[in-house]
Every structure is written in C-alpha cells, then in structure tokens.
Amino acid sequence: MDNPIPSPKPTRYRWVICALLFFATTINYIDRNSLSVLKTTLQSSLGWSDVDYGWVTFAFTTAYAAFPSIIGRIIDTFGVKASLSGALILWSAMAAAHGLVRTVLGFAVVRFFLGLAEAANFPASIKAVAMWFPQKERALATGIFNSGTNVGVMVSFGTVWLATNFGWQWAFVTIGVIGFAWLFFWQTAFDRPEKHAKVSAAELAYIQADQPKVEEKLRLPWTALLRYREIWPFLIAKLITDPVWWFYLYWLPSYFEKERGQNALKSAGLLAVIYTGASVGSILGGWFSGFLIGKGWRVGSARYATMLLPAAFMPLTIMAYYTQNFTVCIALVSLATACHQAWSANVFTSATDLFPAKVSGSVVGLGATTGGIGGMFMTLLAALTIQWTGNQKLIFIAAGLMHPISWLIYWFWLGRKLDHTINVDVNKPDMTRSHTPLLTVGAIIALVGAGLGFTVWQNWARVVAIVNVAGAAQVATAAAGVLLIGCALLYAGMAKKTAAHA
Image (cartoon, rainbow, N blue to C red; front, side, top):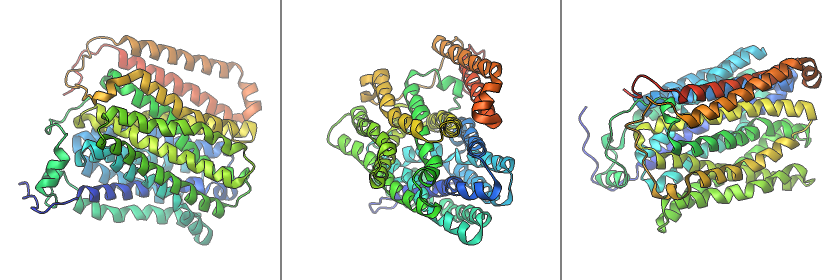
C-alpha cells in the first residue's frame, strides 16, 4: 500500500490516537473492576468466602502475570493495531461470559482468560504512544490514556445499578458488549503516523523530531531482556508498586462495606470520588515531567523529580486506615490513588526513555508480567491477612511504603544515567555466557520458595487451623510461585547455544 500524501494543514491527530487508547483502557477497567464492585453481591448469592474471592482474583492476576511478555513480543511482531484488536475481542467476550457461570471454578476460568487478553492493553498502548508522540509529550499522553483506568472504576456504580435492577448476570453481559463498539473506531482511525492521511507533514516532523529512524523488527526473548541492567529498576518498580493499585482496586469496595459500614451502591459512588483524584494525578504527573523538560531539565531529572513527589506523599496515606473521620479517610485514599497514577505515568515512560521502540512492546510486556506477579501475591496475601486478622490494616501500611522504596531503587540503581536518556543497544546481547547476577539471585529466590514450601508442608495442620484449608492452599501456592520465579531467573542466567534473536 502506497503511503498517502500528508495533509498540508497543521494537525494534532496524535491526540485522537491518545483518545482511542484512553477509551480502550476505560473499557479494560470497566470489565476488570466489575468483579470487585459486585463482590458482596456474589458472596451473598453464591456463598463465597474471602478466600474464594481471593482464588478468583488470583486466577486473573496469574494470567496477567504470565502472558504480557509473550504478548509484548506478539505486539512487536504483528503491530499495535491487530494485536490490540484481537485482545479486546477476547477480553470483551470473557467479560460477558461471567454471566454464564456460577461456581468459583467457572469464575476462575473466565477471569484467567480475561487476564490473558487484558494483559495486551498497556504494552500496546505504550508502544502506540512511543510511535505517535515526541519524548517530551509521552508522559502526558501516557497519563491521559492511563486515566482511563480511573474512569473505568469511577463508572462502576453503573455495574452495581445493572446488577441491582436486572441481576448480576446481565450486568456482566452488558459490560462485555461495550468493547465491541470501540473496534469500529480503532480499525478506521489507527495506523502508523507516517502512513496516516490525517497527519500533516508538520505534525509528522514534530512527532519524529527526537525519534530514531524506523528500525527493523527485533525478536528479543525475555531471557535476553533480563540481562540488561537498565531494565531492572523498571521491573522492580512494577513488581512492588503495581500491587498497591491492585489492592485498592480489588479490596477497597469491601473495606468500605465491612469496616466503614457503607452499602454497595454508596461504595461504588465513593470510588467515583476517589478515582477522580486518580485521574487528576495521572494527567498532572504526565504533564509535570513534560513541563520540566520544556523548561530545560534533562529527561532523567524530570522523571526523577516527578516520581519523587508522589513517592514522598504515599506514607501519609497510611493514616487513611487509622482516622476516625470518614471524609479524611476518603481524602487520603484519593491522594494515594492520585500519587500512584502520577508515579505510574512516569514509570511507564521511563521504559521508552531507556529502550528503543523496536523492543518497547517486549520491555513493557515484561514489566506488566512483573507487575502481575506482584499483584498475584497481593491478592493471596490480602485474602490471607484479612481472613487471619479480620481487617486490612497491615495491607494499608505496606501500600504506603512501596513507592518511596521503589524511587530509592531507581536512584541508586541508575543515578545520573537516566539523565542521558540512553537508548540501550539491544542488537548484540551476548547469550553465550552465563550471567552470574541472574544465577545468584535466582538461586536465592528458589531456595526461599523451597524453604517456604517445606515449612508449610511440615506445619500443614497448624496453617490450616489459622487460615483454613483454602488459605493453606494459597500459602502453598505462593511458595510454589516464589520457587518458579527463582527457577525462571536461573534459566535466564544460563548460557545459551543459539543467538538471542532472529
């Protein structure tokens, strides 16, 4: 197909693309959040315990953790347009399928496939932003489309209203249908900027001003990506801060109902207030780093400064649990979600600062995998902690500390290196030698997992007495997960006989 002649008039079509990504993300989170806002309804109708709910959410986060790195490579190979289209068709079908099942196992199966498909949204969207926006606007564009996560949660009262008036089955079916309407606009409006008839020559030059020339596609496996030192602060940030978002997403509605005495519909309305703050944080966080870059700051310094602000405020949000004033509680939780989203917009963008566009889908996909792993453990630990202690205090404390810890890791790991906005050379990864750091860390993590599993096995009766059989099974699952992560790192660190890419 010949490239169309660019429009001679100045255009800002890149913001149309950003709007498309915003609506895709909103739909993603409407589908994803439907379970949490209907948690008490389903527990009442189907007799679920908190541990049963933990298993269902665990199924989602397991798939969300397992597949992003694979999906990231698919996106790099087949492109953003086709990959995101296919993913949205599958996740919309799975969202509707919730209305057809009634058992914990049935919900776990459809949530698993929902997580698999929804894992494509962020790698595809970040890659699209890298294609369509210059570096100084990427964090803002990311903040805008990422605010769709908040809007998707804000409109969750509609899911509760549907369930109240038409039954929970029809609520799931209805929200599943919404995604198919988006496909028409996506198919007709999206393409690469250099091929798009609605992009003027001036806008194309602006987009590509600080981008390298289009490079050949590169198939880089996750085992090779893990050998680049620069990727690890991003992965660790996703691992320990994404679970904070998962906690608020999955457990906040039940916290308001059980510990604050709010009904389901009012809880959903409160979420609209809280995630309005999150939307503001997402957009401001993206705007502020671009503002600093426009003022002459180096890109790395702008990212550090913007990430430091929300990280510094997060410990204050622990008081949301302790305050007796419910208005103050809502304000502090709103601050927490705003800070996380401001943080997230810049963490995502830091990945495209560090790595070239030809592997951005794979890098962000691997980050989504580590974030999903963190979320997977959060769902298990939250369910166990709540069942054991009867409240969410310990989870609130942990949620307030993860962001400052992650910022310190970024600073000490990369330091001023991020200031130079390095494009890591990924063309010649040496896979013929073993990687000692990966082997060492993998061995330690595998031993911890094996030790935890052995401890659970030796004290099975005591663990069952504390958190019942389902809870004990979750502890064993967590131990097995730690062991598998260690083994994966060991495998990645081993010498390979073949080249790392095709």
